[in-house]
Image (tube, rainbow, N blue to C red; front, side, top):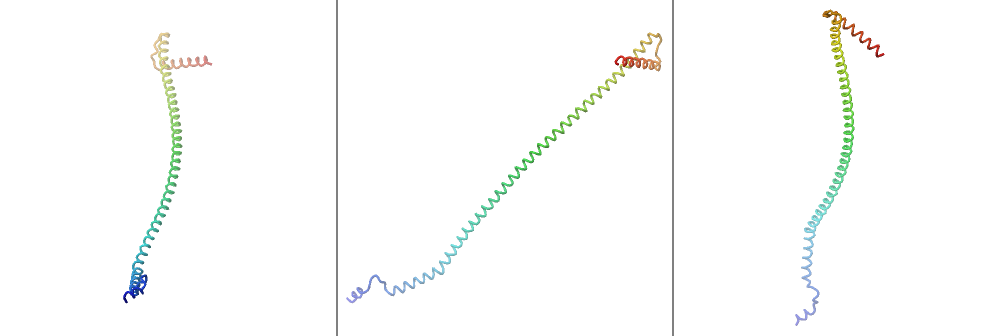
Length: 179
């Protein structure tokens, strides 16, 4: 009965003192181990993750800034290339106009040269025809004069003088008739 009375006197909700001491000591040991070993490792891991995330964000921001700079450079180069292309087109137009003008001038000069050469050729042909005609007229005149006079005019010097005199008279008669 004594045992029953002692059991009845203790409160079932309150643990035994020895259990409380062993439990408290165990809790302090676990708390010490967790505080000394686990918490620093957790803090180190969290710091590494934080650093990695912040580094990733920094890298992303740097990449974004680099991409923006590259885009601006690309736009600037594109604009410069467009201006250069426009300048080159304008230069090509100017060169084409200059070449066209030069070709036109060369063609006109060639045409003038051809016309002058044709005039010179015509004048040379006229002079040649005049010389041939004069010689033929002289020969015919000498032959006719020889028939009229009844003597031969075979002497070259005499024939030349007679022909020249006849042609001079003929030319002066033509000149007087034209005026």
